[in-house]
Length: 502
View 1 (cartoon, rainbow, N blue to C red):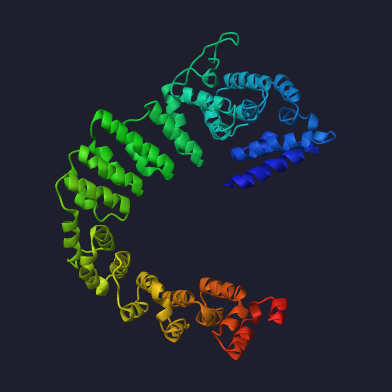
View 2: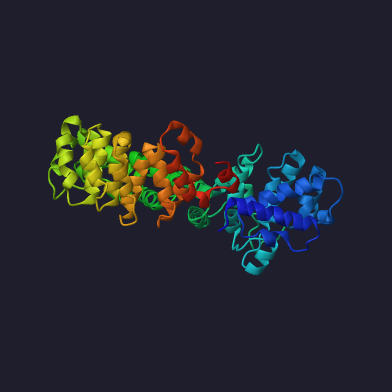
């Protein structure tokens, strides 16, 4: 799938080709691209037809339908029996009232004349990838309609789609009943089965605004029950749409009573917002005792909801966390994180005791908790933890030492940047040397320009390239001879003219 920028670029290219005489059908070239391609095509044609001179392809109906002159656009709508629906939809948000009103009537007529049962003919006539009934046509138009919804006159199509999905009368959902004479109108709204199919396709779209629209519309018209709403909230990949499904499930439970199946679905989501809503819903379901199961959730907001629920039920989160932290068999990194959220400075000894825990994740969480509580750890202990087998522990130790980097022994840190050390140790030592600044940072950067790790090498080379060598010499941080040696080693990454000047 292309990005929006690539779709727009493609649309502009199709517009230029059309006006330069390309005879390929526009709809066929834009079909399968996102709404940005159609919008860019329309804008590019309008811009090019506004320029002096008449391009070769300006007489094509597609070009006239997007022409800079509103009279040309209106005439094209009147002359073309079955224009591409996407271009007609663009004209439904046109700034000229006459064009806008005619386009809306044309769009309703073309959808009404939609052929049913002959898929090949449907593709040729409607310029859509697949259409068995008007519901398929409307589904294909939703992404473009949503993009146009932000324009001054762009809300009409969105309102019509919402009406169609809710089962109300909509110009876009009215069609001739097959088998009746063409002079006999049967104004029908979409059937329940058609609406359900539309919701399924919209909710499963790769386009995020479309999924969000589907969630809002489904909840507004009461399309799904509480368990289905919760299931969709748990499965949704987009956080905004997931929040919408979650709010709908919570509102349905508030109106119709708790539902254990819905609560369990929310709790099983991989997204923190949805799980937090599920924890909150435990109280209404009479399952507040389960709050302790979520005190060690990986997300802080879920832990906060669990603590609130436990307190509402008369429990003490601090006591529960303390029991976990003092039990070396049960403690986890998320238990330590939760304990830090309720602990005070007096609990420092409990966290210090975890610095030698066999699990690296627990040691790293204990270091982070001590730092966030403002409790100090001896420099010697932290320097030793730079060499910890766990990368997370080494990283947390470096973070804890950054504020005191100036008093550390730069030679000892530089030694830990050698290629014989593990990658995470080299990274931690280099971070501290950069924190020291001055000649210590410069020496380390020059030495690590050829580090086997591409990230470290890139950081080192960028530091050397942007280094203020004259300032270092003026500050007396390093002797002229040493700077000359470092400059000679850095020559391979410096600009020749700058090197000569230095």
